[in-house]
Image 1 (cartoon, rainbow, N blue to C red):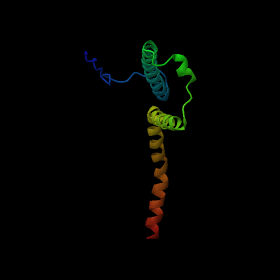
Image 2: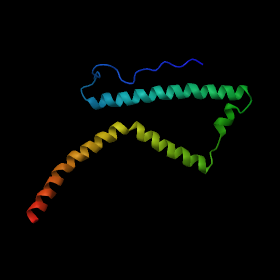
Image 3: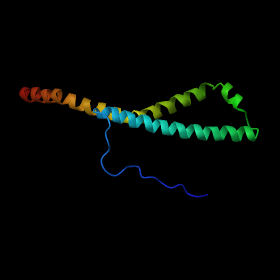
Image 4: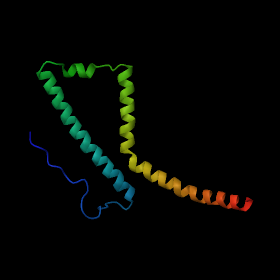
Length: 118
């Protein structure tokens, strides 16, 4: 089997910005990344379904009518939480950074109070 060529994860140069608010560009980048992943997943799933039906393992109708049990639902929920954490990681990192900045004046005030009481 031939090895797939590996693309560079990062382009050279500055990231282009198309909107006046860089947050919109970040959101668009996240959305396009997800769209690409979903497209690849759908193609692969289509392949699996066609091969399964061709080899008489199960039909597409059986997939559509499948009812997951409690264990499957639990595993899916856990996997979904991890996935969404990855998708929203950039936003969470910024929010954490903003919280650290917001806490700075409070922390400084506490230090000042503690110093004056000592």
